[in-house]
Image (cartoon, rainbow, N blue to C red; front, side):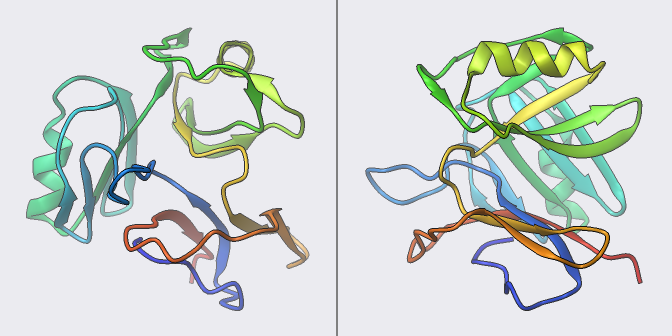
Length: 179
């Protein structure tokens, strides 16, 4: 979604920033489609997430038919750094230093977000994901990016307390309770 999710919306169980925002112009980095509407174009990163109906696909490719498919069927699509491809570390651009890391992962068809509780290097995080038998993983904006989740007891936990806000194209991947 574009915009900040409502923290008081109890149907949301996870909200975390998905695609990077350019510092120079405030636009989304790489291809991005929300509800079938292209918001950004380009291949800056080879990792991708396509959400078509109830199906989420995570992968690594220069070209993915899921971008076009998302525009045809009111789906969603975004690009991010790849971390794991077919169970093997696949890093095409490793940010320097250590930070809190988050990834959107596919492990044997189960889609999940994995986040560190300590600052880790990009390589060490990718290695840990591969060691956990993640088949495909792409990076989600980490470090001090705003987000939150609710545990099984409905307790709210903020991933990062401070919210930057005010960016026109601030975007999030959101999990909602099944109805």
